[in-house]
Each structure stands twice: as C-alpha cells, then as structure tokens.
Length: 296
Image 1 (cartoon, rainbow, N blue to C red):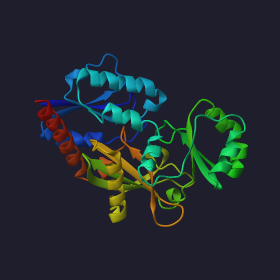
Image 2 (cartoon, rainbow, N blue to C red):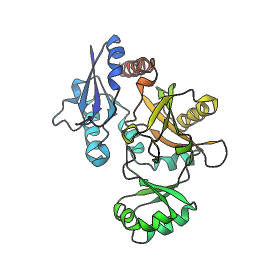
Image 3 (cartoon, rainbow, N blue to C red):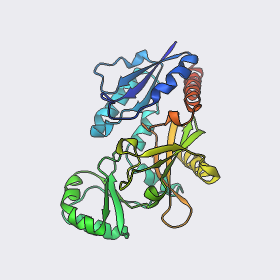
Image 4 (cartoon, rainbow, N blue to C red):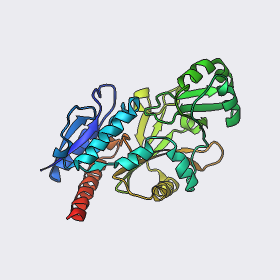
C-alpha cells in the first residue's frame, strides 16, 4: 500500500472538514491516508509516498513556519501537492495582480504595504465606492477582513489603521453580489473540472465560509463560468493537483470577476458531489504514477 499524508491543523474542532470521504476511494487504489498536523515536531516526511496540503487553516498565523515545513517536505523527497513554488506564489493575494496582468478579470484592487494614521479615509476615497472591503494580503477564512462604508471608515479608522500598521493589505469595492447572490466555487483536479458549489453568507454578514455561518449548496455553474474557470487555469500555466476558482458577479452587468484562486488549502466540498472523492483519488494516483514514470 502507498502512504499518503493529508496536512491539517492541530485542532480541527472548529472547522468543517470532509477530507475523510477520500479515504475509501484512495484505499481502493492502494493507498492509506493519515491526517498529520503540519506543526508535528520531527515528522518523518520521507515515509510518505505523497503529501497533500489539505486543511492547515491556521497557517496564516505563522506563514514563515508553514513554508519552512513545506521546504522540509520537499527536501525529504516526498511528493508535495501542490508544490512549494506554487504555494509561495499563491500564499500572497498579489497573485491576483499577476492573473489580472494575464487577462483574467479580477475584482478591482488597491494594494498597500501598510496603513498609517489618516490613511484609511484617503484610501476609501481612492477606491471610489460607498462601500469597500479591506483585507490582508496573507489571510484565510476571511480573517482580518473589514467591510466598511464611508461613514464607518471614519469611525473605525483607528481600529483598522492599527490592524494594518505593519501588515500588507488589499482594498476592493464591496461586491454586492456576494450577499445578493453568493460566491461561485469551481473545483478542478489535475486540471479537469470536477464540481461546483454556491456559497452564500448568513443574514447581515458578507463572509461565505461555513465557519462564519455561510450556506453551501451544489450547483451547475453553467457554460460562462466553466469557460472562465478554464481561462484561469490556462493563465496559471500549469495543472495543479487541485484548484478552486471563486467567482462573483460584477457590480454592473452580468459578467463575473475572479475573487480567489485557491491552490494551497481550499475546502474542496467533497460531500457536495458523490463522485468528487473518487475523482480526487484518481487524480492523486495518476499524478504520483506519472511522477514515478518520469523518474524511472
């Protein structure tokens, strides 16, 4: 049997994780799966035939330590999915700037290294909308995201500016479709479309994650979103083991913006499609087999 590690976090109690649904289809392909916290001291990574980054949803608290662990894994010779160079690029939201330069329509964004006293009001004016979201360049689970109006920006300036005094940030116009319609997520395994979900926030919130009360439902994304997902993967220039592309409808018109391209530790919502775990298991098995054949 081949051995696979799913990287996770020390305490998953507060999170919705359904990665165990992949265990049985992987076992049918000759694999055993072990959930391993990424902070495990002295882990012998070379005992695994594949290591998949799955739910280390606290890595943003110490991203340098997390990347150090991934470097240890790559040095061990164990195949890491997705690979370290892709993780480094995707760990900073500035990857959206790169994709925009490659022709992908992304949510309009202003980038700053930090905020000083008095910067928030002028930043809000630069965004040019009555409502905006400010969030960290390195983040997960909507941590550190502030939804602000022009009025609340003035009242909360000290709080927001203190939070971003030494933290890079991105500011975007608030996308009203997030609350009116929801966020569409399309999932790809080895570059092939697998399934899609629609994520909607609870009442009076804008965060679509389940940990914040969001509602998740399976959907058929339709032709337009399927084509946009393909365009994003083409712009990426590679076919990672897994990818999740999040889209929202633009504030004006029927077109969509790319909100996020998640290549590190996205929730893959296996439970939303009964065949998704099998597709993922086959993708992993094929990827490792191709790697072995290439090395032979």
